[in-house]
Length: 337
Image 1: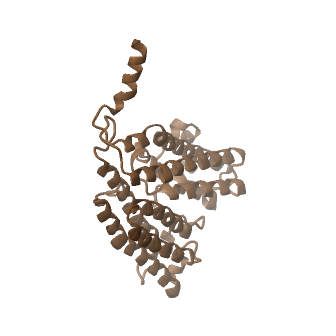
Image 2: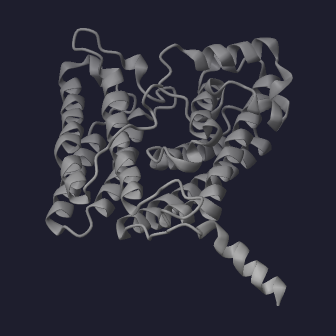
Image 3: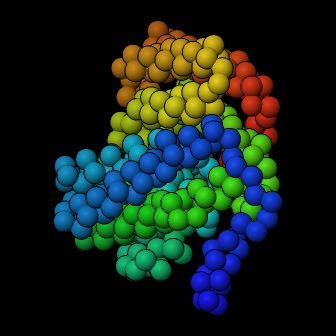
């Protein structure tokens, strides 16, 4: 009799506090975007690591295809900067950008020049700067000949980077699946970082606000620079021709979250959906993979119009969603970086 009783106590112990149930919007966000999104990222990253193990050549089409697919899946969840992504700087180890000081290429060049053996073990990779890890670091090795001269070391580095990404994304997906999702759904329970359902809702709203801000101020504004001094070289993932794609993917993912958070107010939900559809259509119509058009007045205007559309979503639809939910954005995970 004692053993079943002890088991029951252990099962209920984590929820010994005054647990409540998170909102229906939060539940849908977790089950429709967060859990499947991180599961897809982990699976795609594992396939990328397998592809690198099979053929580590930077020109390997299967490897590049797998890297692109995994990078796509990261962009789709990159606004979810809380919980498991922030444990041990996982998000920065996956995606160190913007890199205004050029730390990523500098660190990679040092590793290659010294043929540093630190990359030969998972524990060694853990001690490598986050700037020389993740998708952006791997982009240099796959797409910039300057990092491919030492074929043997470049191969080892490619495999180490892809394995590190696979391990990080697997850890994030596992933590969400095994613990964090349940803790998020039961605010007020003993181990939940959230005390009330409103805190959970605010976390998701903050993620939406952060994603919109990052797309407007980093993905679009950095290459735009100023009219007199455009900065096409600052475009995200330009070596692989993914700059425009990242804007489209991020807006699509943010739309999904915004529509979920607008649930219960059909007029607001329709307005939010239409606003995002406009921005997504504008982004898809640019036909400018690396935002080279920032130097051309006519093409630049289209990018500026897109940025204004995203800013309007932040100023209008985001505010309306916040009013509906009764929350404000507050600080985000990128503040102070």
